[in-house]
Length: 54
Image: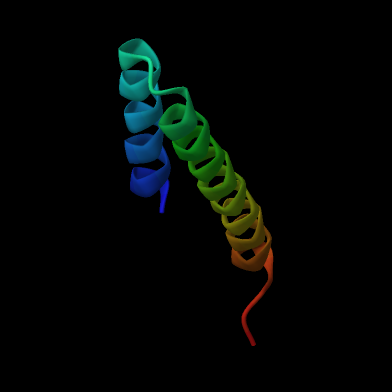
């Protein structure tokens, strides 16, 4: 999932340099969304890893 966020971030940067503002904005929004999901999943996995297994 982090790889998708990084990929869309790179696409957003390339599109911004080329001047395709619509594409850059869309790719940046997707990258932000995937990054948010990744952070939430990371926090959940950190808390689940700390619970004792019975």
